[in-house]
Image (cartoon, rainbow, N blue to C red):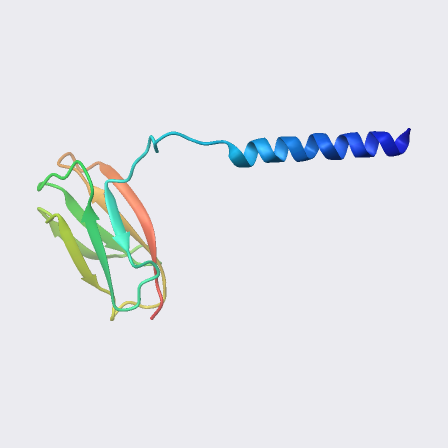
Length: 112
């Protein structure tokens, strides 16, 4: 009887695992405003607006210790940011709206 319970539990577990792996999700409800890469970066990183672009946005980059190291106001649709002078680490970017509220933020890694 004990053997039967173990086998039954194993089969049920496999079925639930299979269902969880085959579950499909719809479109991403929180689609990013900016697509960027390569990540990790070693020489440069590109930021491209995918949707909702507004020239009045401000784009900022912060160092691993939280210091603002790059800012551009009235941001273009494409930014090619050189990271050759950046130290190795995790950096934060922010897109700021007209009202000074953060619209989007994200992280990228520099390998230098």
